[in-house]
Image (cartoon, rainbow, N blue to C red; front, side):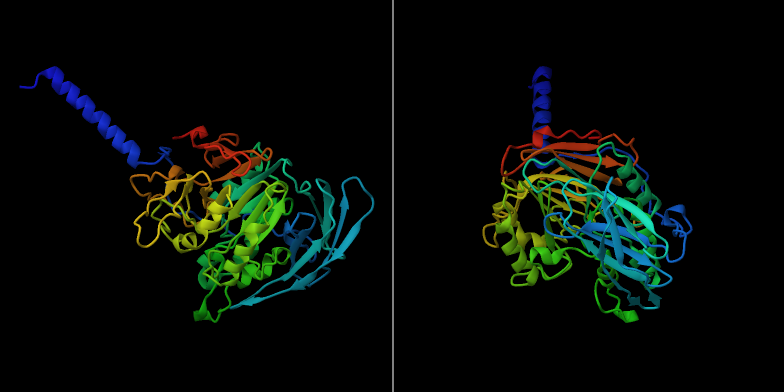
Length: 471
């Protein structure tokens, strides 16, 4: 007969075993933060954030992005409505009276029953590093003035801070995300944008007027600091039933990238250097199988990365490879199978993706050991692998993706269905500080953060250094 003390011991041991099993099977933290879960609403077109600038032929939707490989050029883009006007940009160094000029080009496009305004793109070159420039557009009619700060010289110990935003849209939540980013005490100097811009395709006939309103909405940020563009599924705009059979037409006309500088044959995949970072942008919705142009370009691109010059290797894409949300589950799997061995071989530090309207950060994991006969199909911790971060939580009208798989897989370090943005503050060639901010918190609150150690210069396991405020 088992006595009460023995029974208590058996129960205690059983509880310990259950706890250990749960610990081994489950991953990191699924946030307990409670937020309102509902489909978002786009802001009405008469909202202040969409205001059309005053004046005849006034430039609107002004935005900038890097214009070459090393950050010594900037692409300036804008739209005029009344007439083409001038495609010239005047620019000068802060404090200088000497104005320089560059001439651009203008185009327009039609989409079903919509005709765009006159879209201007002008590249200004030979920028001095780490210098504040003022620039003017609308020369000859209504002149509007803006400014930006050029990046530091490409180099291993140049500190630089990136903002991270994805799947933004133009809802009330989108406005909260952009405001939160603008007010973050950690000031981003450029935004790594992981795709899905305007969500115009959610309207009848892919109403391209919503591309215009989105351009006016984000101008308050992207006219002053470059956003590095990644193309997402909501930019495809392939609608054969209304005669629109050219994919990415609105996006391609409005948002240019410096793809030729990295020998890419498409504006949808390319690379840039910015300060201490080498950034590779991939296209989840263009062909990426073996022998395709994107495959061959990436195969040639990775060996070019000099980690002595640019120690931080970052990849942007839209569809995540590691995603424990049922929303868009496994959609990035075929690209992962094709490209993940390169990510591990070349020690990519971080991969940022969108698509899933929630936040998730993984451990450093890989699944490259698997083949169709060995059965090794579970991701394992891998010190040479990147951290995968899904940040498709910008705030679009489709709402949050809150149906997470249970139990949380081991590769998942932290996840939460909330809208927000992140910052990546690169300190030097060995250390960077990453933080995610949810919209509901005060501007300085970090809902998830992590010291990230460079894979090439400081390949230490940083998983134990994470600190999730809401876990």
